[in-house]
Length: 213
Image (cartoon, rainbow, N blue to C red):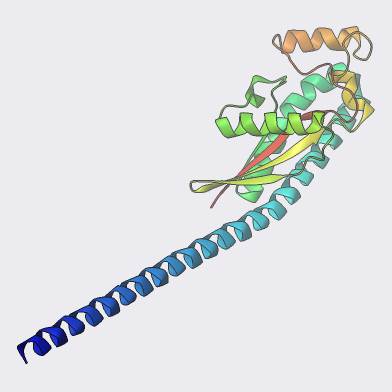
């Protein structure tokens, strides 16, 4: 009788352990599933935010590009490329400031081959994105806008290409495409200028638009 009692107690203890073990595993599985679902939802939310600001960034960058081209064409018609170098520098700053205020964002033009030192990349993301675009362009790949979520800010980058022969009058080959008078003004105004030697359809730089999230 004593042996039977001991056997029953042992059997009950074993069954209890098995049940507890199964319950713990089930709970771990539920927690893991919940964490995975939460991560998926978070990533979906981030993707929705990126899509929203890709659309918004394109609209603002397109408006900025169109206005800047209008300024360049007007300056060219009024006083030629040399006049445009001086005029467009001031107008570009005013244009970026006015559009930034209108859309509650910060608009910049950035390039590794900058003319105005204010257009030099400063952050790691700026430099990496410019270099990435440059490599993709050399491979013959299509360049498309991107959005990065950086803390409380969203950074939109849109490539700028040399799309007009008029651009080469100030940014083309100094020996054959830029007039001596224009080149003299560029060197006087921007002694450390890097923004020459371009050809049609070359990658020039980026529009960077920063939004508060």
